[in-house]
Image (cartoon, rainbow, N blue to C red; front, side, top):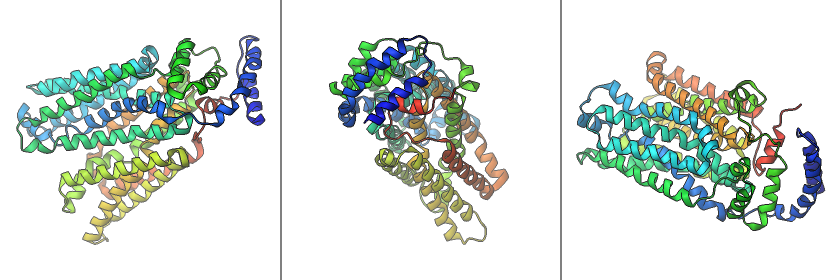
Length: 489
């Protein structure tokens, strides 16, 4: 106990003080810290913050739904809108979302800091409703593309704001578990889109229903957010301490409010209201954490996960498995891994899950390389290929999928958190776009054996990168993490 108090006092010595008031704050807060020790030893109830987190993850459900909503109906859409056989137009229907997502993610940090996390969620829902409605009612390709672009802006805005919000409203003891809900909601969204799309070949115009359905959760998100708590961290940065205190009471319970406010106030360097310059993030004092975050997202996308999703149906087809059944297998593997990650996130920690996830993905890609080897018999090759693909998706969902979105808001200092997340998510979308654009061409030019070997190499590089650069954040408050990552002066 006294060790923790000495640590808190020594922390103040590291902070840059602009006047002698910091010393007075230490003396006042020391007494409060002593009184808060008993409270700190008991974790806040997860039940209070759970409903707020659940509402926030609707944005992740929508993200997954819109990623998968055109997969099954694309053929029907192209026939009805008159561009059947035009592969460029079909590709645009799928990928226009990515362009909108890049725009949305670029501005997400400034929106979240400018209007708050709750209103950012509501702003995320608006283009999703308008865009889905346009796609559902359009009579031509242009209307479909505009609708998909608008939906994409909401998709780009939602995930970084969800990661911020869940990190800032969750108790430290369950922050990893709650953070895993984002990945689970995304999986459920993808599976929901596949399920809704089943009748598309039997019922004319059913694809329009697929788009209309998505307006229901989007409307629910915008409405339910009116009753959710605002992030106390954001309120405190705005100088609205009384409101932050009230929101902490809603999220953690009355007995934990004073300690939570102390955690915020003892790290108040008086500069949170300053404008965060892009130069600070790209080559200033915060470059290292932004580099770690961007690299994690880059490695996540370059690991081959999207390539596996794009190519899975043809692999299963060669094994005699219908495409709709193949999608179910992939979805179940993804969801199972995500649920296990949720159960282990606050027990094993983020770093351990990341390490074993990327290592498992490496082994899975080695199986794919072996399957592509001409020396392996036909049936053996199919078993290795299908097994390797399912293992890859499962191990991805264990760590590489959910952890970066949870870990990055934890390691980013409060002052730069929203804008740093925006930059990292933009890296995610740019690489996602190029992987989707170039994968099939690279497959033709290099062949599966060499391409999968490259993916295995990236996964192994990720293991080394995580081992050397990622810190464990399990069970630590956001302030404790920020202190540990303070640049040395």
